[in-house]
Length: 403
Image (cartoon, rainbow, N blue to C red; front, side, top):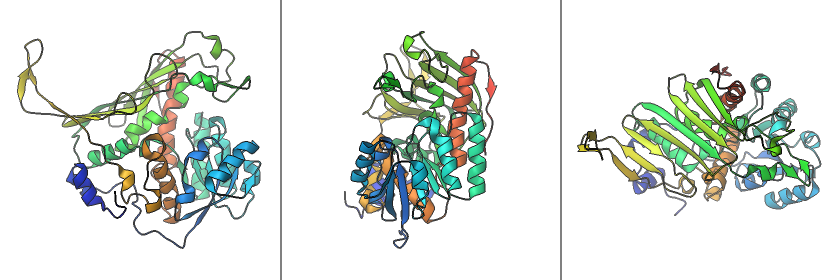
């Protein structure tokens, strides 16, 4: 598709409602790039950190990379065409040329690494989740506010192609009133990452609900509502693999039933083991329209629209005959939502190029990114409380606000 294709023509071709055009997006579209502004970034973490596109962004220069392991530093330098590397985050933060960092480091380190980076005066993009406990959530909120710097969490589900479509549909009013939602993240077989060379990794026994953002973002990034209360349940099988984990977690899988500040019921499942299809997916159910992401990847999303026609069900009873259609997913990465060099597919449902652009563009234009500190904590904290509830046999608990 031609890079000069404009958004209106693309939407028309893709069959997306024209009403979405009149609704402002939470994204800042690429528009006119500030060609004379180059954000100098340092990338930390040579596994997940390899999958992004800072070297392609017209307003970004990869100044340096870092990982504790030499072979991972080499991989980062090769990927980002960078000749400077550091043996640790601490050393990288001392580089005065670096003004922003991408922290693709282990989850237990996120809070301390973000706090150190902000203290060093660097803008921060951090992998998920934001933190693993409520105390660190509060510390992060206060530190970001005090610093005046840009913080963003690299949540992929908020930038998947289907989520972008659903966000536009919601803003255009196509759902009517949402009456419920659901999301699930299934990663069966995750225990293969529990140990490396015979030693436990940070993932050993990680409670599923301490990694909730791939699910919670499906609702929050679309509607902006907040999860206020939860009852959580967990499943474990007394497996010896879970014994001695640092989280004292007995569960392979966890399910949470959330209530939002709009009284929307929201079911979330995060599962590490079982007869499951690997997927990250959401469902949004409304009075006028509902949207169902595919049950497995790859797959096709389904739209159900309410219809005035009457019919009979299999038992012969009268019902409303709703219409069902397969959704033709636009490739948003082919439009001018991204700078021209970045208009290609990328990891996690096309999200990685959007995350890259959103962070750099937020710094350049001195604006809040889509997943700022308040959104990041709104995605993260509910899972922490859901796990607490599961440990208490489903006790109904209130979720603190970090807005």
